[in-house]
Length: 395
Image (cartoon, rainbow, N blue to C red; front, side, top):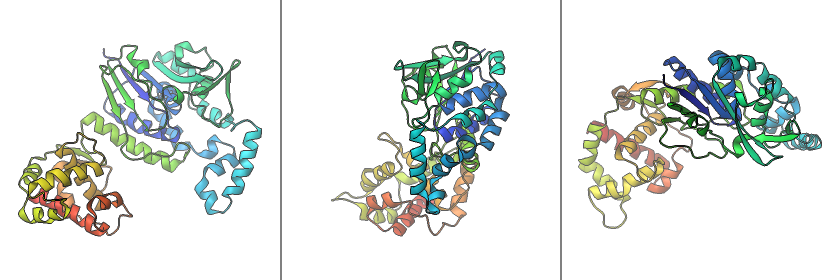
């Protein structure tokens, strides 16, 4: 039977994203033989292995700064609220002075919180490959460890070591100091490839930290968010729910082969739009002349100037395809029209919604960089993009 594993990147509060991805895979019948991760990824790996989805969901539904830190530290970390109350600077000075005197932020509440949800005995009995990454400051060497390598009764100690962020009190194991594994490998795919796993789901959070190379011939599916997740220490019920939802739909995208970056589209058929692009209407070609540099005329304006600028704006990389540009434009205009994101759309349904939905009056500066490319006012740029897209849809 094929061995299937999941790798979870570190990222603090962004770990809620892991839960959504995991939920999607469970609902599609996946059962995992191993979980490995770094920092919050290691904590989630242990939670998934000990109690499956329900316990992990409960952990993230209950997580908050006050659950993890002393009240004054939690208050400072909630900097927006503190700033609004006009006490930010004073509170930071006071708390930082205490933290420095105590040689770091106390992690006792974090330990107590995660201990509620992680059952070491259950993990060992399950016999799964459960692994983590940490780094010894004392020895100046990394440790990539599976539960079988960890002495009984010390799993929580090593999970705390794996997630010991800069600024926290040193995590001691024996006479050695350990810090967060992100300094060595924040996405330890290699831990499962080395065990010969047949399929690996690598869940990114796009957090800071080093990512080591792994065997690129391995069957690895990377699930990664397109939009930003919560900040590393922005632990709250609201942020967790939002990131779980993004993770769930991104998991569905990977499983079902959906297209789109911001939206979730199935049965995409761009043939008609591509044909309309190749044989663009005369009035649209005339409008494109305002974007011409020099003596470029006709379709050359479209393919040598407009499409490359669109590809650059949508950050599609150097080798983008026209299909990718069209999908990005569809998503962009759908966003402008306020079309619901978290839903799986048949492509034709999505296009019809774009055609019949009224555009919102304000987008809060969404197109500022695009304005620079096309040297027009924001309002005119928005109108142009929509006209251009509708021309490609309707022919």
